[in-house]
Image (tube, rainbow over all chains, first blue to last red; front, top):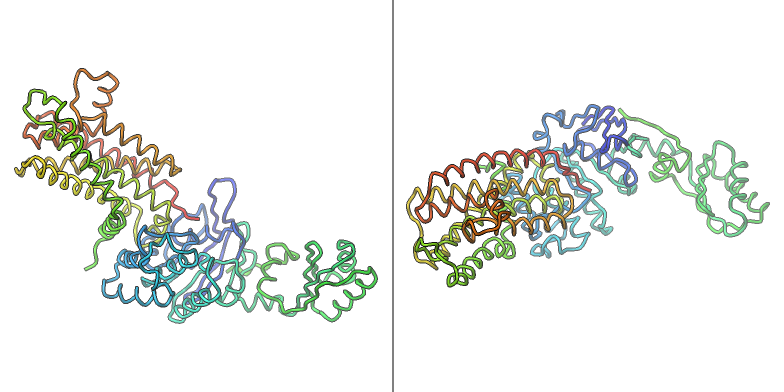
Length: 316
Length: 255
């Protein structure tokens, strides 16, 4: 998959996609991270041929979505962010979907039974899809997509509403399919999931890719640093954090939110010593102090402008 | 051998629209019209000197009425698929937009033909006689097909344009009422009707479907009926074009 300077506007005023460039390799799990409204779903819609980008170049499976949409759609699977069901039972939803994709009946039944079991929805097979819980609906939607074969699977926030066990089951199933050669484009704002599943990820905000790199590189980018979470219990927070920022110097990032702050530093020992000094001098009591390794969340927060705006665009 | 895409869509459309509730609306309601109106008005309605009973007059009208019901199925399918996310899901699948549209149109036609065949069976049970000549049956079911495509296209056009479910349902109910009763389905066009109603009768495509079906049913088809069906055919092509254009331009995005 290949995109270059992709732009899309719904209203000709604001761009939901604003110069997006990236490549996705075969067999890769590519994550799209971003807040609600960042442009993730618009990008998925463009890649799945549902919308035609306003400008730019896009190739999916080496094909041009504008002219070879059907050839692309025959080889992709999509789990939408919202609900999408036929007004019938869970079992029939799977059956019908398999039929629509031209899966022979015997194979359809075999896959249906396997998927109903695998996703823990066998006991609700006779219930109407619209009558089941939100988590069950997500499971049905994901299970249904595996009724057919595909080269690329687009998962648009597939784990919303799932409990921890089902979330892991889903991610593991995707991993299993990736091992068999499936390419996955996965949007989420759950960074742990991206960390668990993706080979590379792009952080997207306001229609632009802010960071794009392998998960390992993204973490390595900030890997030499550690994060200190701090909350003060009394005293004047603004003054405390202002003094602390001065003492820590420009190499250390301090992101303040009310009485709490996230400090990104190369030298946690030195930073802790400075925190203790400022705390003592200003008579502020430390309510919470925690030193931890950087996570993908830190990368995300920094990328979208909550932590110093250190933009690193590794777009291909 | 795998079915063509359009037929797969038709099969799916039929399966998801043949729940008991939908069938009652599609077939039960016209059937009830036939029984209650047919017998209820028999005693007060004049045969107009033709010697027909009102039930015989009404039967082909109710068969023609199935084209409106079939049209509402088409519009409702597009609306429901958009509302419940299946439109975008299908259009991200192995189908083109046109295949999806033709799937709906063909489903509408099948519902129209199926519904009118059921009405024919009900009429046979009530009257004891139905036309059996091949030509009459071809004209009846040909008219039903053209009418179903026309009203299917019309309702699709509406469904593609209207953005609110409530508005769509309200318009649909109003249209069914007006189209149904300002036509020759229930009573003939007569000089005693107010001018407004007469105009509505004349511009209403259901009048021509109803007249053609009735003409073939009672073996009284006139060249004018055939001419009207040709006009309706042209109108069907126009409305199909408009519906296709509106639908192709409509937003199928999901959230």
